[in-house]
Length: 181
Image 1 (tube, helix red, strand yellow):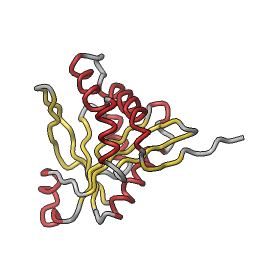
Image 2 (cartoon, one colour):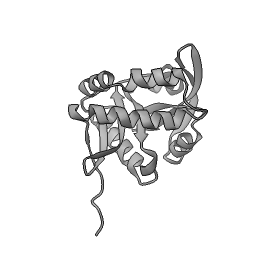
Image 3 (cartoon, helix red, strand yellow):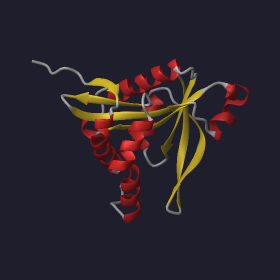
Protein backbone atom coordinates (compact mmCIF):
# COMPACT_ATOMS: atom_id res chain seq x y z
CA UNK A 1 0.00 0.00 0.00
CA UNK A 2 1.53 3.31 -1.06
CA UNK A 3 1.61 6.30 1.22
CA UNK A 4 -0.23 9.51 0.36
CA UNK A 5 1.96 12.25 -1.11
CA UNK A 6 3.00 15.22 1.00
CA UNK A 7 0.58 18.10 1.10
CA UNK A 8 1.53 21.71 0.48
CA UNK A 9 -0.09 24.39 2.59
CA UNK A 10 0.55 27.84 3.98
CA UNK A 11 2.49 27.79 7.24
CA UNK A 12 0.51 28.23 10.44
CA UNK A 13 1.61 29.79 13.72
CA UNK A 14 1.84 26.36 15.36
CA UNK A 15 4.47 25.36 12.74
CA UNK A 16 7.04 27.88 14.01
CA UNK A 17 8.99 25.61 16.36
CA UNK A 18 9.24 22.75 13.87
CA UNK A 19 10.11 25.16 11.04
CA UNK A 20 12.96 26.52 13.18
CA UNK A 21 14.42 23.05 13.72
CA UNK A 22 14.01 22.14 10.05
CA UNK A 23 15.64 25.40 8.93
CA UNK A 24 18.54 24.98 11.36
CA UNK A 25 19.22 21.47 10.10
CA UNK A 26 19.15 22.45 6.42
CA UNK A 27 21.21 25.60 7.11
CA UNK A 28 23.92 23.63 8.92
CA UNK A 29 23.92 20.85 6.29
CA UNK A 30 24.48 23.54 3.66
CA UNK A 31 26.80 26.05 5.28
CA UNK A 32 28.77 24.11 7.91
CA UNK A 33 30.86 22.33 5.29
CA UNK A 34 34.05 22.83 7.33
CA UNK A 35 32.37 22.11 10.68
CA UNK A 36 30.42 24.22 13.12
CA UNK A 37 31.91 27.40 14.52
CA UNK A 38 30.50 30.08 16.83
CA UNK A 39 29.48 32.48 14.03
CA UNK A 40 27.31 29.77 12.43
CA UNK A 41 25.72 28.92 15.75
CA UNK A 42 24.86 32.58 16.37
CA UNK A 43 23.41 32.89 12.85
CA UNK A 44 21.23 29.79 13.41
CA UNK A 45 20.04 30.98 16.81
CA UNK A 46 19.24 34.47 15.53
CA UNK A 47 17.52 33.41 12.29
CA UNK A 48 15.78 30.22 13.42
CA UNK A 49 15.19 30.54 17.16
CA UNK A 50 11.65 30.19 18.49
CA UNK A 51 10.94 33.92 18.64
CA UNK A 52 12.39 34.61 15.19
CA UNK A 53 10.40 31.81 13.59
CA UNK A 54 7.16 32.80 15.34
CA UNK A 55 7.64 36.36 14.03
CA UNK A 56 8.44 35.06 10.56
CA UNK A 57 5.29 32.93 10.39
CA UNK A 58 3.19 35.81 11.73
CA UNK A 59 4.42 38.33 9.15
CA UNK A 60 4.75 35.93 6.19
CA UNK A 61 1.14 34.81 5.99
CA UNK A 62 0.76 33.56 2.44
CA UNK A 63 4.50 33.94 1.80
CA UNK A 64 5.57 30.79 3.61
CA UNK A 65 4.45 27.37 2.42
CA UNK A 66 5.34 23.99 3.89
CA UNK A 67 5.46 20.43 2.60
CA UNK A 68 3.94 18.12 5.20
CA UNK A 69 3.59 14.35 5.35
CA UNK A 70 1.67 12.72 8.18
CA UNK A 71 2.20 15.73 10.48
CA UNK A 72 5.95 15.89 9.70
CA UNK A 73 7.35 18.95 7.94
CA UNK A 74 9.75 18.03 5.13
CA UNK A 75 10.56 21.42 3.67
CA UNK A 76 9.37 24.97 3.10
CA UNK A 77 9.59 27.92 0.74
CA UNK A 78 9.64 31.51 2.01
CA UNK A 79 8.94 34.24 -0.52
CA UNK A 80 8.22 37.95 -0.65
CA UNK A 81 6.08 39.37 -3.47
CA UNK A 82 7.15 42.89 -4.33
CA UNK A 83 10.75 42.46 -3.14
CA UNK A 84 13.40 44.02 -5.37
CA UNK A 85 17.16 43.70 -5.79
CA UNK A 86 19.55 46.15 -7.44
CA UNK A 87 21.22 43.41 -9.52
CA UNK A 88 17.83 42.26 -10.84
CA UNK A 89 16.76 45.81 -11.63
CA UNK A 90 20.04 46.55 -13.46
CA UNK A 91 19.73 43.33 -15.45
CA UNK A 92 16.07 44.00 -16.31
CA UNK A 93 16.71 47.53 -17.58
CA UNK A 94 13.44 49.01 -18.88
CA UNK A 95 11.57 45.95 -17.58
CA UNK A 96 12.66 46.75 -14.00
CA UNK A 97 9.28 48.37 -13.40
CA UNK A 98 7.58 44.97 -13.58
CA UNK A 99 6.76 43.50 -10.15
CA UNK A 100 9.12 40.81 -8.84
CA UNK A 101 9.06 38.35 -5.95
CA UNK A 102 12.03 37.09 -3.96
CA UNK A 103 12.38 33.44 -3.05
CA UNK A 104 14.00 34.05 0.32
CA UNK A 105 14.51 30.40 1.25
CA UNK A 106 13.81 27.01 -0.26
CA UNK A 107 14.73 24.43 2.34
CA UNK A 108 14.08 20.70 1.95
CA UNK A 109 15.48 18.18 4.40
CA UNK A 110 18.31 16.18 2.80
CA UNK A 111 16.47 12.85 3.19
CA UNK A 112 13.56 14.17 1.11
CA UNK A 113 15.50 15.86 -1.68
CA UNK A 114 15.11 14.41 -5.15
CA UNK A 115 11.42 13.59 -4.61
CA UNK A 116 9.94 16.67 -6.29
CA UNK A 117 9.30 18.66 -3.10
CA UNK A 118 11.50 21.57 -4.16
CA UNK A 119 9.74 21.79 -7.52
CA UNK A 120 6.32 21.63 -5.86
CA UNK A 121 7.18 24.27 -3.28
CA UNK A 122 8.60 26.56 -5.98
CA UNK A 123 5.45 26.08 -8.06
CA UNK A 124 3.34 27.10 -5.05
CA UNK A 125 5.48 30.22 -4.53
CA UNK A 126 5.35 31.09 -8.24
CA UNK A 127 1.56 30.71 -8.23
CA UNK A 128 1.22 33.02 -5.25
CA UNK A 129 3.62 35.51 -6.85
CA UNK A 130 1.59 35.53 -10.08
CA UNK A 131 -1.57 35.99 -8.04
CA UNK A 132 0.09 39.05 -6.45
CA UNK A 133 0.86 40.42 -9.92
CA UNK A 134 4.55 39.50 -10.04
CA UNK A 135 6.03 38.52 -13.39
CA UNK A 136 9.53 37.52 -12.29
CA UNK A 137 11.08 35.56 -9.42
CA UNK A 138 14.57 36.09 -8.10
CA UNK A 139 16.74 34.55 -5.41
CA UNK A 140 20.29 34.44 -4.18
CA UNK A 141 22.31 31.25 -3.81
CA UNK A 142 25.64 30.90 -2.04
CA UNK A 143 28.41 30.34 -4.57
CA UNK A 144 29.67 27.40 -2.46
CA UNK A 145 26.34 25.55 -2.72
CA UNK A 146 27.03 23.85 -6.05
CA UNK A 147 24.22 21.33 -5.48
CA UNK A 148 21.55 24.04 -5.19
CA UNK A 149 22.97 26.15 -8.00
CA UNK A 150 22.97 23.14 -10.35
CA UNK A 151 19.38 22.31 -9.32
CA UNK A 152 18.25 25.86 -10.02
CA UNK A 153 19.95 25.74 -13.41
CA UNK A 154 18.05 22.56 -14.29
CA UNK A 155 14.82 24.34 -13.32
CA UNK A 156 15.47 27.18 -15.76
CA UNK A 157 16.88 29.82 -13.42
CA UNK A 158 19.42 32.21 -15.00
CA UNK A 159 22.50 33.48 -13.17
CA UNK A 160 22.68 37.26 -13.70
CA UNK A 161 25.40 38.37 -11.30
CA UNK A 162 26.93 38.41 -7.85
CA UNK A 163 25.89 39.96 -4.56
CA UNK A 164 27.51 39.66 -1.13
CA UNK A 165 25.90 38.14 1.95
CA UNK A 166 27.52 39.57 5.07
CA UNK A 167 27.31 38.51 8.67
CA UNK A 168 29.64 38.97 11.60
CA UNK A 169 32.13 40.94 9.53
CA UNK A 170 32.50 38.25 6.89
CA UNK A 171 31.33 38.48 3.29
CA UNK A 172 30.22 35.51 1.22
CA UNK A 173 29.54 35.63 -2.51
CA UNK A 174 26.02 34.78 -3.55
CA UNK A 175 24.77 34.47 -7.11
CA UNK A 176 21.57 36.28 -8.14
CA UNK A 177 19.25 34.03 -10.16
CA UNK A 178 16.06 34.97 -12.03
CA UNK A 179 13.16 33.14 -13.61
CA UNK A 180 9.83 34.21 -15.06
CA UNK A 181 6.99 33.65 -12.63
